[in-house]
Image (cartoon, rainbow, N blue to C red; front, top):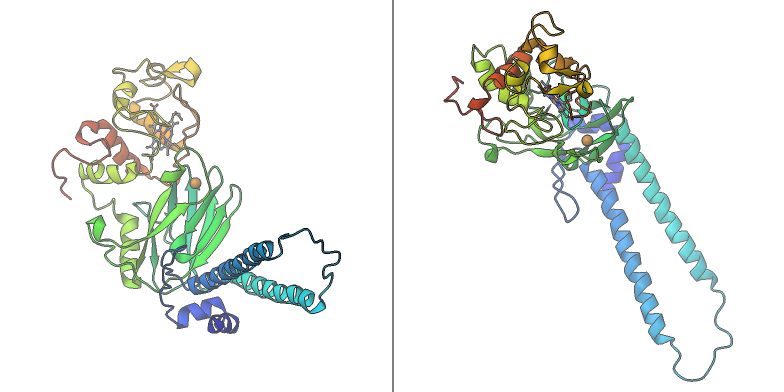
Length: 383
Ligand code: HEC
Ligand SMILES: [Cu+2]
């Protein structure tokens, strides 16, 4: 216990993190296994306060019950004068709790300052939260294609976080870090982990180790789906992974684009759009291509009934062709609102490039080749 405090006071967080390999801290009843450099201090602070509480709870309740039994009225006698004062006892129950409280405040505050001060050399990842998923953008400009968080092992990582819409919070229990993401502000959070999550490159998800990243602030209907996995990679593998994120779509040729990239990108839309006609926050994609291209459902209402698909889309109309309408719906979703839905779709401007939009449109056009979860079932894609 004491060595943790000494360690905390003698080294700045960044240095401590770089020069040592902090072991995993064990899981217990309250917390999962701790995998970051701050986990031992956080656990110590938590356990210290918890055990003091258990101790005084038992002491106070125990004495109360004992005294109630011991000093209960047994006969008709009345005690005229009980003890009114006991200086040593009063000094004791004032001084000891004061020392304990100051001690708790001291290491709680220290830990708070350490957690709020990212080391200078921290690797920065920009995080945006929006209903209902996370987006992770790396210094190269690439974003994590599968919307999971990948971080390099053994160096401080700083998340600079903002919200597109409402209040969210990033919570990674294994790293003992949690921070609100408030609209209109940037929040930061940092951690370092010295432990690789094995099996991250396995195609079989059951063989992959990962940590959980939750949204910890109730943010609407699908708050519980606002979740990402955290993979910790050795630096060399991380560099390879990052390199691939920038150009994974470039390697896809022809139909592979919508067959392979479509389902991956659909992950960002799945919380609001179903593929099988099911109801959700936004319109189902089933039949979408038919209605925007003038087939069944082209008389569907938009903008409170002031427009229909047929009145907006076609040669000489606002949208020359269905592609322009869909593209605009993704980049500028507030422009036309499909009845009876609300104007709640976030913009994907800056997140999906033209190629990604092509992939999504290819998927919409060939929806019969995907199952209800977005898995490609029209034969084996070339990749
Ligand atoms: C937070 C929920 C939400 C998410 C996430 C979301 N959408 Fe939407 N989307 C909606 C709602 C609600 C509408 C209907 C209102 C409107 O037109 O803006 C809509 C409408 C659309 C439309 C027009 C559909 C029509 O029938 O006119 C398209 C196309 C679309 N979304 C594509 C996408 C794509 C692609 C993604 C993922 C990259 C996505 N949406 C993610 C909620 C969402
Ligand atoms: Cu959220």
